[in-house]
Image (cartoon, rainbow, N blue to C red; front, side, top):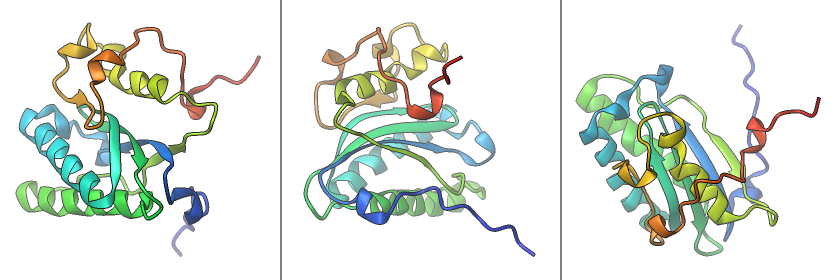
Length: 173
């Protein structure tokens, strides 16, 4: 008998409209698919196209070797994050499987619906600083697979991180 899968999503209404979301999509088996520069650039271009079609502003993104982070904001009441992510994953998965014969993504993804207390620029800076934290570069501007489609991201980088995703915060001792 198959194991029941826990639904990790909020009610679908939380993913509609002019809200901002921090997302992480991981490669299947955490393979280092995006260590290949051509595949990383390919993902960024598909992200650009899909965000335009699905009405999302990409405020920050960072493609790491085995996952990617993105901060998006719905541009109108019809912006549907779940449809956006599903379309992005299906589009990239089909093309990647045709090219490489492998599964691209893990089944689910991590999301954080930003709240009023969350500062978008701090979240964006957290994303852009990821390659520095992982030792891939010393300056986030050196990393070729980070950016924004909505602003001049280099002006928003802050090496002092004051935002951490909820699931990474340590419990009080």
